[in-house]
Amino acid sequence: MVFAQKNGRTIPKADKIFGISSRAKARIEEKGKEAVINATIGSMMDDEGNLAVLDSVIEVLRTLSPEEYAAYAPIGGTPAFKAAVCKAAFGKFETERYVEVCATPGGTGGIRNTVSNYSCPGDKVLTSDWYWAPYKTICQEIGRDLDTYTMFNEAGSFHLEAFAAKVEELAAAQGRLVIIINTPAHNPTGYSLTDEDWKGVVECLNTASAKGRITLLVDAAYIDFAGDEEAYRSFLPILEELNGNVLSILGYSASKTLTLYGMRCGAMICMAPSPEIAEEFRQVTEFSSRGSWSNCVRAGQTVLARIYEDEELLASVVAQRKEFRDVLIRRGKTFEKTLRAEGLANVPFDAGFFTCIACDDPEAVSEKLAEQDIFVVPLAKGIRISVASISEEKCVRAAKAIAKLMK
Image (cartoon, rainbow, N blue to C red; front, side, top):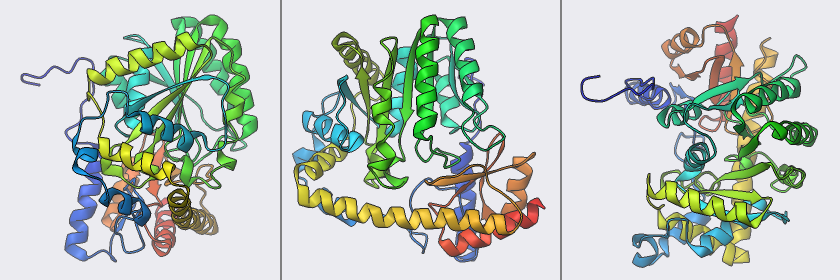
């Protein structure tokens, strides 16, 4: 550093995921789309490699008046958006908790605001050992550390014992704890916690909260691409069993569910045990928002509100999203089936944009695959493959090439 200060951060020259994706795009320019498999992108792409966008959503976007997209939105989000995003996030579930909403730039803003407001400088924030790399970036950026627990046991299920041990350790040491659980359709593995997993998590948190207050952020960015939209919300009533020393926050990404990635539209929704804690949530998250991004893009908020005001329009969006989801699930299952047929297994996978394969030297494996025009993302414990960004046929090609290389 010359003028800038590291402040305890590890700052790479370029973002790893976007850097590898740029290399893939350069190779596509050189050799053509068909010759290159770019399995790095965290967006839904069609079989030709073009961004897949919900037409029904775009039609709404085109009807907005200048004021509906050019005017500032309130810091916490427009009232219509707040009402609509609760419907979008909760589905048919009706919580008995006290709810407040803060608009965020995608799901990422909700993560940042949760860590900033519910932990202290120097604290450790807890997530699984397979995790989305920006969790660590966010923690470092605001003077926190990221700690992890072993996500899977030997049976390939959620490792509740490892989770509970780490929660107890950190809650006792710090007197408070922020936990991030990404589910359903976990990024990067594609795993979804079962209702039994959730019951164990809630019991663990209720016990550990005697040592300090716990804030649980459920990062549900991919919830509408996991499977049946109501079935994958079955964990929400289980969160109602959390005691008064645990605050649950649901992170929702309208950017993902509406395929408006660049609109950066999301929300953090608190399910507070008391009205005082809900009001506290509103105050602190709006304060943090003002001090970082100020307020969020109005257009995405208006689009979501419009959709939930019109039952026919909502039905159209849900139906088209199901078509996208069905394609995504087929790709993921095809990749997994092909990989297993070649004698290799991915980590436990359910649904979503990504799946992972464990390996000892992810960087080397990634580079070797790039030499074959297959681009994946190396993580700490393996490689991540985006089935959202490649066709079913390329899923087969990629699985076979990876299996051959790994063997």
